[in-house]
Amino acid sequence: MPFEFKRLEISEVVLIKPRLIGDERGFFMETYKESDFAKFGIKDRFVQENHSKTFAKGVIRGLHFQKKPMQQAKLVRVVSGGILDVAVDIRRGSATFGRWVSAVLSTKNQAMLYIPEGFAHGFCTLEENSEVIYSCSNEYSPADDRGIIWSDRTIDVHWPSLEPILSERDKKWPTLQDADVGFNYG
Figure 1 (cartoon, rainbow, N blue to C red):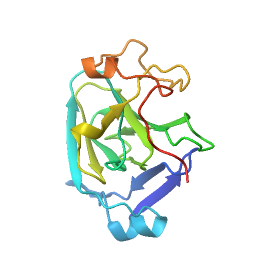
Figure 2: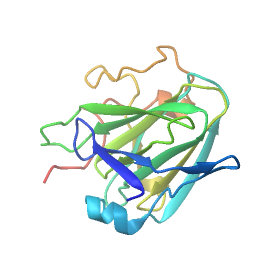
Figure 3: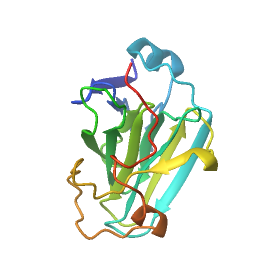
Figure 4: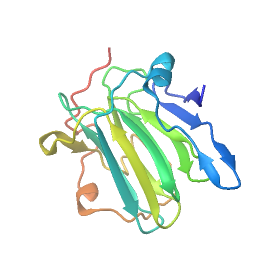
């Protein structure tokens, strides 16, 4: 199988390492194969792909999610630089509600992170000129776009930058307690 799948501490979030085939010219890797992902239990169909470039180190983007019925699962990978990628469980009633997991994604490790529906997503750039590509299981819907403040003390994400560069939008998100989440476990 061209992928190594590893469940993180919140088992619905999966770190994926593709198999690289390389020689003196460079490398080739499959970044997604529906049948292999489905065998592991990831059955989302990805319908939109996004690409972001962040110029500076220490930028936080997130924590973002879309509420129902436009909720999104995401498959995140880095094509330049590196990030700390974070997923926060926002499914009320879940044993892991409000907890977070993270993974370093970079061009060095070529790892990807699968984040299911019911999780907020964010990342902090670890290098300048980091580029992230993420596939989504639902199209972007401005009316359903939501977020949680990156510094929510009840979640307590251990970001690598305590004075991050943020967008005006990301500075204004509510705490998880006050967010319009709309996800229930089960």
